[in-house]
Length: 155
Image (cartoon, rainbow, N blue to C red; front, side, top):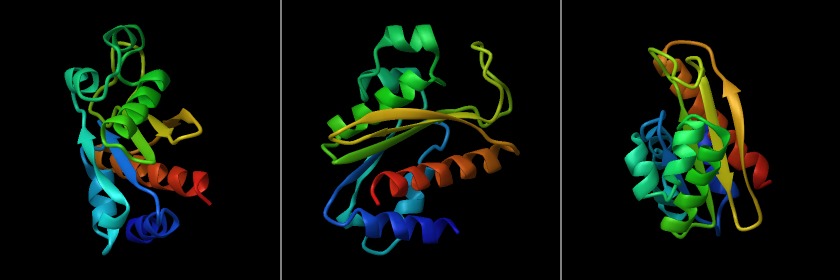
């Protein structure tokens, strides 16, 4: 399933470039994309921003935004995607930040809460998801949702 979805993303993005900013998925989006032969024509790379320090220093997410909203939030997911697009000079970037478990966060987000960001030359946005399952299941559902967003936005 994931390989088919990744293949579809690579096909639809021919002639464009894609970058990723991953927190809760820990490189899983990049892994899914690079499993596809020929993905290097589209996928430029990603930044695994597991800590707020990396979100701030490498992706340019403002410290005040992280403090005010928490890392697991709509504005941070959007800023992560915008930062990855800018830093990796890609046409499109996606991000994932969330809670795969075992616990929630101090902002009241329960396990399974994931925000997925998207940025291209014309727009940027982030959507909130609530996935169910253990840590691996939440991460896999997030990866799948990211790939589906890329497809939807680039049909």
